[in-house]
Image (tube, rainbow, N blue to C red; front, side, top):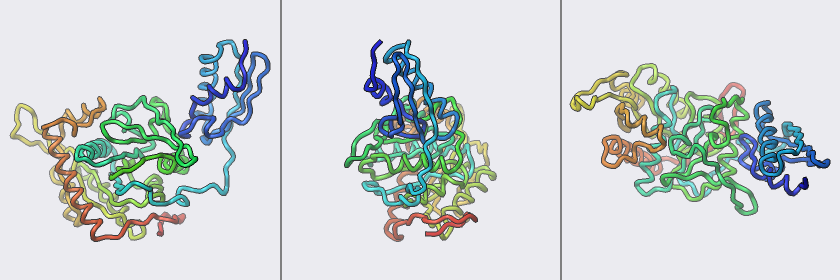
Length: 377
């Protein structure tokens, strides 16, 4: 059998290391290729140091060479983590306003399971239907769900050359641009990363992507108030935040912590308002009845208590869950109650955003984080 390094390089151009965003060739991960007759030995370095990532790259290389060149080739792959570059720019060092993006809105919740990602997806659809250019950054690195909600779970971002630099092109569907770690990881495997690794992945999706011109970038944050949240406010100036909660006391208590995080003097991201999800349930056979399964007016009362705008309530409707599962957000259902509710909430959010932009200066990034967790600008 005959094959050469060029054949191997062509195959390696189709393989991307987990979280890298570029092929092994583009990222200069292939350090050596040696061919001995029908045997090839490859030395590869990747940024992800986990054993899981190394094994995944090794298996993908072997399979690709066998499938695309010859099944009988003996393939030996040595995968190791790239040596740390002490002077490489960190996410905070790269902090800057993203060109072409007018407003960046963080969608957050203190508690998981309150429908924050569902709300983010539907707000994006509502904004797009109003004629705005919209992008969604799925920053929930441990549980990325946006690829499923936008019916692009099997898609992969392409690359493009912008001023001599290779950049990712966000996946687009329903008029919304999207980047998510879900595009670069196996959906059946857990993402087991420390905070620094997760921040690096976010760094790449923010700064190594070609978002183009956007009126709005919505950032779907994970639950809580941890590393990811701090990395985001260190990386880019957030125009404002929207908090999602159910009426349940436990969820409201956590939502209050989410608000407090953004309102800390050294973070100081304006909270545009609070959305109450799963507010009530109305059976189809009893259209005039409302059942408050998770309590009543919890998020609404929180908005009043902290003098923040209440953007609206969303009922608990089966079709919303079904729409998310099949990858067609419920806000696309023309003439439906849920479309009207999301349109109303979106308009209120825009009103608060206009007020914020008229009355307040641009948000600054958080530049330094001390060991005690305090942040400065």
